Image (cartoon, rainbow, N blue to C red; front, side, top):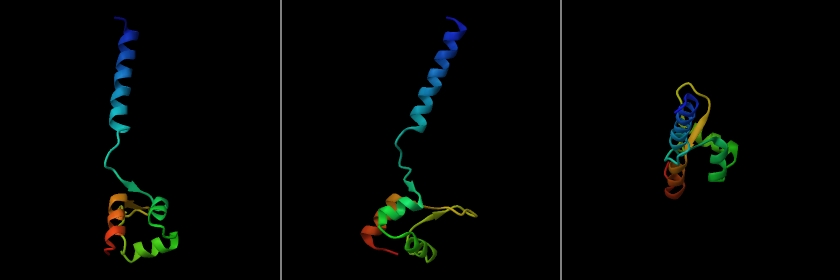
Amino acid sequence: MELKEIISEAVAKALRNYDSIYNKKTDFDLIDFKEACKLTGYSKHTLYQMTSRHEIPFLKRPGGRKIFFSKKALQEWIITGEK
C-alpha cells in the first residue's frame, strides 16, 4: 500500500468519525432568544422582562451577556404555567 493511499484512508476515517460525533442528533436543546420569542409567542420586550423577573426558565453563563433557553423546559413551562 502506498503512502498516499494510507493517508487518504486515514483522512476518510477521521471525517467519518467527525460526522458521527458532531452531526448526530442529540438531546442538546438550547435555543437562542429569537427562537424563544417564536416558540412562546411573546415579544422581545416581554421576554426580557420575564427573564429579569425570573418568571420564565432561562440559562445564562456567569459573566455572560447572552441568554439561552432550554426548548424542553420552555415547552413544559408553557404547558404547566409554572413560575
